Image 1 (cartoon, rainbow, N blue to C red):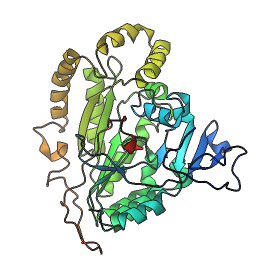
Image 2: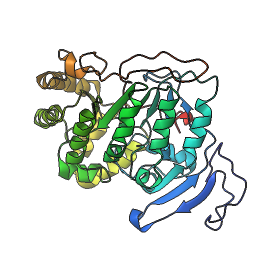
Image 3: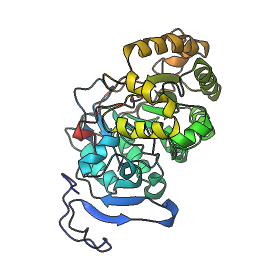
Length: 365
């Protein structure tokens, strides 16, 4: 197993036998509270990851964890685990890499004169509020470090654990633009247990949206991925958008399932087990690439647009759909931080990242 760029030469007391010389690995931990999960604690040499030249609204990310106990069958980030010589299936769900020193490293990087205070996104690869965060509590230090340095931040999560840090995020929003996004792709709890077995309940995430809004923060929702013939009917989307509107979501973005190499095999194996009647339809739909066929995409767009409008999330309803609009903005009251070259930021909330960055870029990790 290789941990490129995170060399730690010394054997650390408490390290499991035979693992102490692996570059970057301090120890591997299992606990009864996380049955079947192994946490590999590493010392990272960097916290800020550069992602230049993408279509994303940010150039920097932080990923305190690699792998994810949400175990979503469709997760686009699964192939990233192969870089660690782990597989994209059960290893991705059960072998979790934890950058235990990420807060200290981040503070050093933010203090550099060269740091320009650009937006930093969390949740672009694996979820920063997955179950491991309950044990390691890395996010409070990350949020404090970013806000204290005058750096805008956005968080995209499925984890209701974010609720623990709402007061901290509210405080950060008085210093810098803060964007919060919740991923909630389906309203069927039984299907959720099959396709997202480690994700908090639908009701829990709807309650989280309410809590974020009650804290005075905007809260966009990523209805992503939409699963063809599983979660894409007009009736299903209408019901979900209605729930999101009632919960107070600031805006909604819908994305149809992508099936990248590595992800496709894992998802299709699940589909063959749970819905064998759909296998041939998916094979045809994704026969020519990672995206669904254009005919499906066009039909979906025509179907979803009036439903978004109906619930106040469409282009004609900017008060709800545009998280950058002044009407809905709980804008950060930006104060210049104590730094050599203070950066002037927009008073709008930081844009929420999409859930599909280019996982081929090793800088994401």
